[in-house]
Length: 253
Length: 261
Ligand SMILES: Nc1ncnc2c1ncn2[C@@H]1O[C@H](COP(=O)(O)OP(=O)(O)O)[C@@H](O)[C@H]1O
Ligand SMILES: [Mg+2]
Image 1 (cartoon, rainbow over the protein chains, first blue to last red):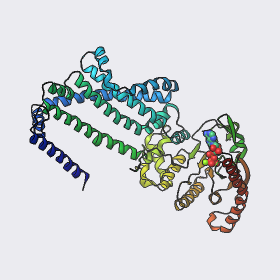
Image 2 (cartoon, rainbow over the protein chains, first blue to last red):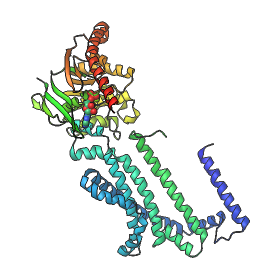
Image 3 (cartoon, rainbow over the protein chains, first blue to last red):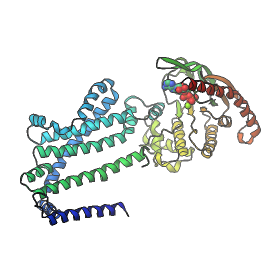
Image 4 (tube, rainbow over the protein chains, first blue to last red):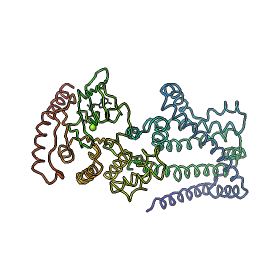
């Protein structure tokens, strides 16, 4: 059987069992809504376009944050890989910060920027930048010495060597870094929106929860999961696989 | 003298302990000569080639090319490594154009690249990615890339060492043809006696620990050498005798090392 078919059957069974249990035990929709209730809430949300606006608002914030995070991460990663003193000082700080979930920065971000989009964007940037930096640094450090030697014998050195050989050679790590940055940023964004302000998926989820609208809460949870999965599997993993194959780094698995 | 390796010594310092890898290497190579450097693994062949390439500094001594001292890598010395070292983010054609991009227009560089890819019989693969090529084809691209910048010397460090027997034999043939056509000076590192006899005008036999030159043998067998199996076998035997003591030395040292640890 093909994996896709297996997956469809698996999810169909989950939904059926879920529907059966909720209906048979007569559980109240404010405690645990049935799939049909969730579907109804989602259909309504899409029909009156509120969910579409939320998704667009969240994505806009994510895109801005992620682009800034990737640019900063590339720059900082190069700095750490090339400058020993920076690596021994700033590098340690970045590793330490990486072990702090970015959402804990929200209270202080709200103090700095106010209860608005800027505070959320700040923790999204933070969530993505650190992991991008760490991967970029490893990528530059792991460039095969053979490429560098070969380029040198062909008259390349200095900035030319870096731009034409070292940087492109580190692209596979940069792609992995971008994928992880997206994952961290997406999680930080949702947490940030729930705890601060909207518009956005997280904010609407919190709003629905305050009004006991569990149908919509679960509906949005599903949207968050679906978007995350699609971005990861359909986009990033595919790009990563192509790059690894082309760069000859593919591990047979 | 075209290429002169003069009193070269090389020491590596590891954990306060200095080990001498090359000791008093002196060698003179004429323009157009095909010279093999033959020796057991670890005798310093790669280090010597890397010094000629300008990638490694000798501890003492100097290398002169046309009377000019070599201090850093340059396009007058093309290098081919055991791994092809093609850049995976470029096509075959772009790889060969890499050393040319600063000194000529793109169109011209592409023409030169095609000309050399034709020489190694890869005209049909210009737009391919390196990972789509077999090991032997990749190595041919690396040779075309090194030749495209028109170096005075071609340095080759066991370029066919990672290939299967059949491919290697075909590439020997191609390299000999290229050498006869271009009359490039080639410095060819190998640990295979038969490979060195098959290809070179001169074989520099190296001994190990420290790396020294044991003998400088002129190969007088007419080309193609495959037509003279008896002469080849005789020379092979002679070199085998020279290297046997060296290989015994390596084995003995390794046994002693194992016994002490
Ligand atoms: N960068 C280095 N640092 C320390 N020792 C080295 C270095 N490069 C090579 N060596 C040592 O020098 C010796 C000769 O190496 P190499 O030139 O690669 O030999 P070959 O190419 O003949 O097999 C070896 O014992 C090796 O361990
Ligand atoms: Mg070697």
